[in-house]
Amino acid sequence: MHKTNWDDFRFLIAVMEEGSLNAAARRLGVNHATVLRRVTAFEEQNQVTLFKRHKSGYRLQSDQPEFVSSLSAVRKAVEAAQRAVQGQHQTISGPVKITSTDSLCEAILPRIIYGLQAAQPDLRLELLASNSHLNLAQMDAEISIRPTQALPEDLSGTEVCNLAFDMYGHREFVSEHRDKGLRDLNWLAPSSLLAKSPAGRWVKTNVPPAQRVFHTDSFLSLRNMVSTGLGLTILPCCIVRPNDQLEVFPGLATKLVTPLWVANHIDLDDLPRVRTSKEYLIQEIRAVADVLEGREPNVETTMSAADRA
Image 1 (cartoon, one colour):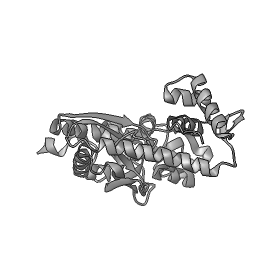
Image 2: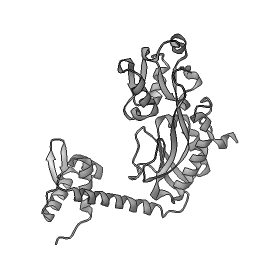
Image 3: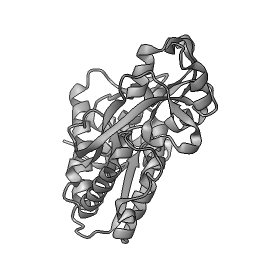
């Protein structure tokens, strides 16, 4: 019986998840030949054929479901071990990556992050603005601030408030078209990752495709485009500023809402730097809940509760 080299699993997992030798090599920081050599050696040593070459890359053979499950278990075990090691550090210091949408990164988070840094000067904070849900299990970030109906099972979080959306147009456009039907007007539509947001779902259901004259994957871009007077759109209330010259168009019976969560991976619950950062973020985001829920205009949304005290 051959002795297993545990490091081989790192190469096999990379090829399985990336789907090509080149992509796996980039992920692992080695060259293509090294990945090929390690995979080939494992297959020859164990007298198995794990991967089949396709035009689109390498794919695991369909008769290897148990091996796929085992590789996934190995990856999860390694990730859990990495998080456990990080959890041994019991001081409020070190790096904390926080991820949120580009809208929230502009509208409310800058001064909140400033306040957290001032309160915990030994933290090294990083704010990742992305409308995709980063993988907290793989440590893409420690804390996520996201609007979503529910959290995945591997995340531990707090629902801090609702994120509200309303229908907006430039004030001149609203004045000119107030009496027209929504289906007769030009619309600016959320696309890509925003298509599943409350705004994206509403537009898909209520606006004919022919009326959607512009699409983008950013609410900030939607805000900037609707400010030109091109048409109507639905935006998070918190990103609308007085100088955008936008007005609510009377088309929604009530604002659209979705829960806003502050979450981390469950294995990081007892990590002091994550727990302390998360508690601070929850407190400060709740302090601007009126803005996030559309009850107050976005005038000083980046001012933290500590600054107002």
